[in-house]
Amino acid sequence: MKRILMYLMLALVGLMLTGCNGVVLNATYSRLLDETADLSAETAKRANAGTLDVDLMKAALTKQAHTWYAFQCGRDGVKADPNLPNVSATPTPLLDLAPVPK
Image 1 (cartoon, helix red, strand yellow):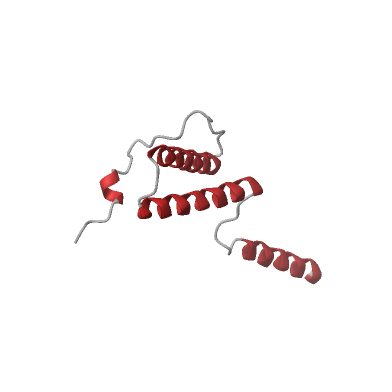
Image 2: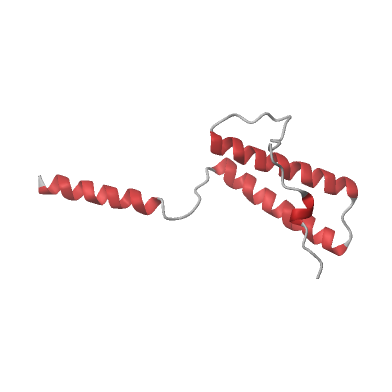
């Protein structure tokens, strides 16, 4: 009986430890996150340098919107519609994202 209780305690400790690393992603979402982080970094670099073409900017923003929509669908356990990024009922105004000049 003590041995069973000890194994049960070890199993519970193991389960608690697996939840301590923040976010756990499957291979699909891990790849999607890496690709989108790279895309965001490159988009920001070009925008800051003044070399971001308008068509590339539109494509990058659209891709990023689809990525975040896929993450929302994954979180909610629903299948994403590939033709439609999620439009929030209360979108964040763009001016809220821009830094205020001092």
